[in-house]
Amino acid sequence: MNKEEVSRRSFLKKAAVFSAAAGVAPTVLTAGTDAGKPFVAKPASANERVNLACCGIGNRGGEIIREFNATGIANVVALCDVDMGAPHTVKVMEMFPNARRFQDFREMFDKMGNEIEAVSIGVPDHSHFPIAMTAMGLGKHVYVEKPLARTFNECELLMKAAQKYKKVVTQMGNQGHSEGNYFQFKAWVDAGIIKDVTAITAHMNSSRRWHTWDPNIKSFPAGETIPSTLDWDKWLAAAQFHEYNHDYVNGQWRCWFDFGLGALGDWGAHIIDTAHRFLDLGLPYEINPVKLEGHNDFFYPMSSTISFKFPKRGKMPPVEITWYDGVNNLPPIPAGYGVSGLDPNIPAPSTGEIKAKLNPGKIIYSKELTFKGGSHGSTLSIIPEEKAKEWASKLPEVPKSPSNHYKNFLLACKGLEKTRSPFEITAPLSQVFSLGVIAQKLNVKIEFDRKKKVITNSKTANELLAGPPPRKGWEQYYKV
Image (cartoon, rainbow, N blue to C red):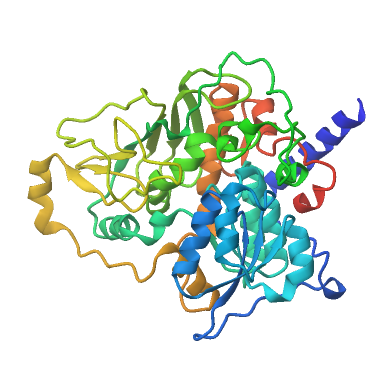
């Protein structure tokens, strides 16, 4: 074997050992702290703002910063972005002229360690993991945009790190967990309105996450001149090397298997999240790519239909979730579904309006009732209308949210609330997406051992739980 093969085999062997030893907590390096001792952030007093460092300040990262700033209890002390000074980052830089600026999160922690209490991470999926692991090892509270990480084992490591660093507050950015759908779903489950669920249809058919690239592609796109403002090496982070191309950056990264989790990882966290949480779904035992249009080795299909099967849980029956994405890949709609237009509660992207033939959302089938729901904070309704009227008087009162998702995180940093989307909840949810992505990439049915956390019917698929080994210089974040 050559050195590259030895390195990969060694990495996969360690990853496999880790997957089987779910109770082991990771050891996170704390280089750059005084005398090698991590700084543990203490909860701020009730009248203090939380010192926040922001990694990723353009596009979605910029939206996150604005939301934190709007709470009135965030003190933005540092801005970090690999493309500092590009058109999409300038506006946020102008908003916080006194915040120190960095292009490397490691340098930021080295130079400002004791001034930072919490970190927001709004960068491409492949870079979530090293930033979050570093921050947690240094005792910083962490807000990570969804999906939590790119690979199954990265999510596993982040979950174990949260167990180890118990004083660190964690939150994943699926904002609906602090809005109406979260509180309604819980109340309806507790009241026995939602029970005996056997099937869920989840769908996202907007053109927002699709491109015009040829699915017959035979190689990655050719290298281009790197923009003067961009540090391409740091953008790649732990990912395998690719020459710069404009089709990798500014949202396009989500389309590539090497960098993002596609429409499933993007929207699944806003559509499947409450069902996964309150129906105690955990991990599936079978994932089947029922339909993949435009399948290739490099980027996500133009349309995907993926089946996820979950076993019986206590008294709850088995559940099958069927995911539909693609502009024309619409799911079957039951009689009495009603209006299919866009829900005004679903926020539009920073790049424009959502355009779809069907509102992104879900249909939940139980033995007695059928529920129709949207995405994000959109609440459920019983369908058809006649059934909804019959049950109207039986529905419980739903409590109002005391704080939005951003304020909830900051208040938790101050010790005043608990986060509603901590890593212990959101890591398994993100692992569901990563399993779906493996099925998409290989176009094979996956059989998964929920206890051992290994794929049993494909060695190639099982290796993708960890993915390729990190680039040289990024290995330390993956040590257990």
